[in-house]
Image 1 (cartoon, helix red, strand yellow):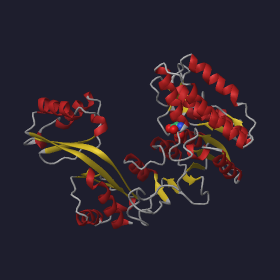
Image 2 (spheres, rainbow, N blue to C red; image 1 turned 180 degrees about the vertical axis):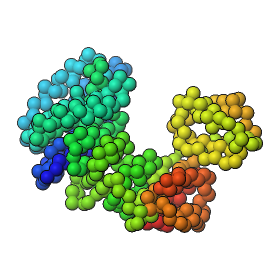
Image 3 (cartoon, protein in one colour; image 1 turned 120 degrees about the horizontal axis):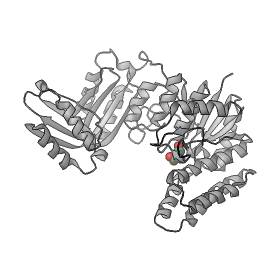
Image 4 (cartoon, rainbow, N blue to C red; image 1 turned 30 degrees about the vertical axis):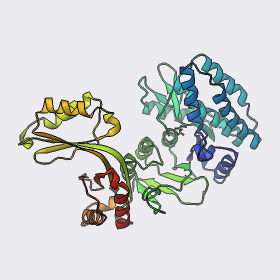
Length: 436
Ligand code: ASP
């Protein structure tokens, strides 16, 4: 017997139908003891997530516009689920308290957090299990950074007295001010991981609406193979490149304590899903997954005898730091250094950045390649195996995809190629076909 920590995502707590499925999943296993709830998500394609509605209320507050109707939509959603499941929870007290705080001009984080708060109150009443607030348990400093050790201790001491508990995800308290702070979007995954770590769980089950990770994006590849096992390291690489099922910051706490994360589907609970552990399986497959993102810019800087010049890269990085930009990649040649930046971070300041490069670095030339997509082919099985890149580049050449940039770390777990945005889908298809 061990402890299982479960997190249910927005779609898994979206309405009465989903909450029923959640209940039977929890009741099927006595080890499932700590439940983290997200705010209700979309019930259908054009529906709204409760968190988005709460942010909308805050925008209305800031613009001095009425917010009652938007808040009523949120209220109706919770009440409908409570009626549907015949839950005896006095939600009215909570709605009124939130409205009072809104009138007093509450913070954006406080308001956004109320989706998880109400959801956990409802789920706890439905399961007839203790509600334990995340406030005072998940702790942040005054810059909104998680206080890991303090949080770890607070969780262990607060939850150890509860055999079972429901905890709201996504938020905690800023220690000095006592104000509510949230993680970034999708942050309930992090709450679940922190609880799994602090309670020394045997597994962290992350229940969502897909049966784990797929080898590639199903919008590009028809029926891609599911990934049954993946290592934390491989997943970090894939998440960084845009494979988003789990918040990337949810990996660290579990990795630290070596707790497996199992991504499961609330709608198909018998599917095995994806298990994430520290184990790499280089013998069974070469490529674990392929992920990518569009809209990067490569700035190539040329200077004769650059390789003999000291501090050149440092100066590039300092210029970018002044623009508050972090680089994605830094491929170098003998007389060239290229920086790969996301268009989002450039934020319309490309000319200014180039002017600064010219003024401070005195290069012989600067060339810009816009609309670049990056694709990461990830797999622990690439390590020390010959012919992997040959296969990848042959596949791309046969698909007529021109490779604009190549980057491979010496960990040999990841080959990143840069292609034109317009070649993105063709490149992913070609790589998938070559390695599936
Ligand atoms: N409700 C929050 C969001 O929509 C957090 C979460 O669901 O994990 O981002």
